[in-house]
Image (cartoon, rainbow, N blue to C red; front, top):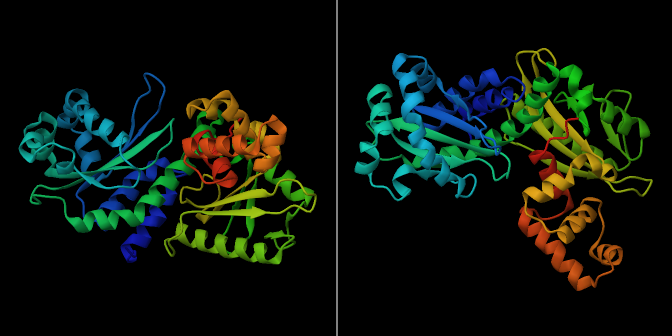
Length: 384
């Protein structure tokens, strides 16, 4: 479904949350307006035992949470929703699921204490639950609540939500890196050097205004990618350079609420013959000037697959339940080895290597090396 003016305005507020999590109220209010909901709660759960949920809310829920009734609800009734979040954990990502399609009848849900209390206090009745990601460490999901006058969830709401879901997921993904940086180093811009992948931030016109130490090192090496005198990224292939420029413009325009592209993944060949660099480009907005005053642009992650140690493969493969043999194969995939090369390195037949590669890709849910590296970085941000 195509976004309207309100949809594009919502994108601008959504990407502002990556650097400024205090902006989630505004972003979720904008999302409710686009979808036609009354309220939204967004929940982030860590895998560690005892980890507390992080909940972001739109105005209706947030204002309610600050009242005595809201405190009571949070302390005594909100735990009844755990069964709903657990149900969403078993569902595919980005699939809106109305509460009446979870196997419980309307009268059963409406009689539940948390439902009845929230309906009486906020006017929210029917809901949609949506799982936002499929990471083994982080469970991101949201609940969209609708006005009690709606006896069922409007079908249009499910359709409208689909256009925003990739952007909400991407904003949370980017935000995790900046949250780790703030938690460990009390600052963002000065701590970017602690990110072991190359990080560059560019304006929509392509001009790079921020680089961390790893990005400077990669660009200075001029092995297929560098900065031109005008501060824009160039590569040894003019077609790839044009694609990067176009994608930065589209991505940066999305951060400004003027386009609809949540990510771009590009490969950059290296004259040295080493494994090509991987560029992951995503929208970034910063109205609070954590990074740069009134920044709307693109976050460019430059990954050097030759430096796979920072990808933390051991922990990643354990999380995805890979066997020791599959873990070794996973490392070779990340390094860009072909099936024949993997068979040679591991002294196995090509058929065995092919089957093991297929098993690794199936378990991780990706289609190749680029997606695998990106998944590793997303699940385990490379912050020193």
